[in-house]
Length: 440
Picture 1 (cartoon, helix red, strand yellow):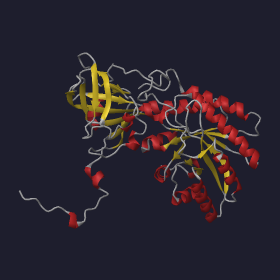
Picture 2 (tube, helix red, strand yellow):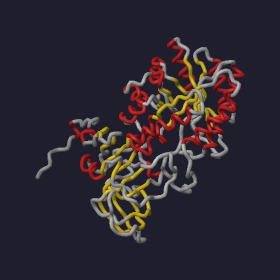
Picture 3 (tube, one colour):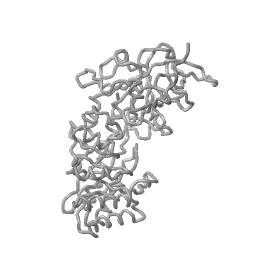
Picture 4 (tube, helix red, strand yellow):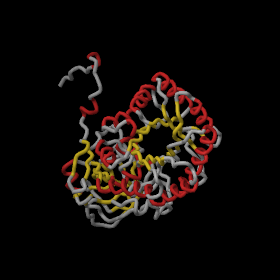
């Protein structure tokens, strides 16, 4: 596995990958079946510490929350929390997952466009920090606080235009340019039941442009100063979200456009801007980050087996794998690295890669250069650690096992392969719908 310290964009490598952290690929397939997701503890821990250290060197007060929606397998979340990271959640389900792992309420940041009253009541009771997404949510949380007889500290999510990106995620949060964000801040400040303590902006996902984060930091600092001038109340949390890229390459990207970038570049862009904008202020706010993809994507691989070959009408060779878009959802957006897991004699040829689903959209890659793999041989697909284990679906196929290669080279099963009972367990079959016995 190649890391963030190398290039974000990659050229397809033709060298076979026979091992993951010293463990033979064929051993992993033999033990856990195919397909199988494999995570590298060593790679993940290196990413965690790299990102934390890069920002901590540049700003005095840094707090980092793990983005649960990126991958909420218990083993991955637990490993991050062992490293001291908080939890950032975007749903009641994710909140319950974090609490189930023992994360205390004050170490959870609550985001998302839909926070039902039941969740807000629990978050308020357990001391979590809620970042408001729209005015209706503001009114709902105000009512929750009133019913509790407790004034709650909150943040607001802001959407803003970063010139380097040319746009913004306007469907989330309060708009900066229209004045809506300042209006929301003043509305919170006037409430007897809410206290504005944070401003937040998440620019988007997979943004390989450090300058965009500097622009976001600059805009949020200006808003922070305006709020403090108008209200006299301090803003304690400045949240710049996440969205840092991983080692993948976006479909349609220029390939080498983000070459040589490291997390240090993003930390420097943000840290330099914050120091310039906050110098002389009485006390620094806490810099809050909500990272996901950049931490776990490169640590995940998917091992898949060739189950069929074909020749496309245009002459391109085709491979059919036992893994498709049902478990590799991110193939919609990324040109994942795909290499043979064994030496394969013969020249590399343009190859289209398909999954097993009875759907025309189940195309994973191609044409890409691959050696002439045959039925029973494996491919290693990376970087697949982000979003696939949260967005995978049970369509036509059971979901496979997930394993972790520990730092000492041992292998742990962290999620067993599904069975039909897992799929059908929640159902009930009324007697009147039960099929009759079939005659021989």
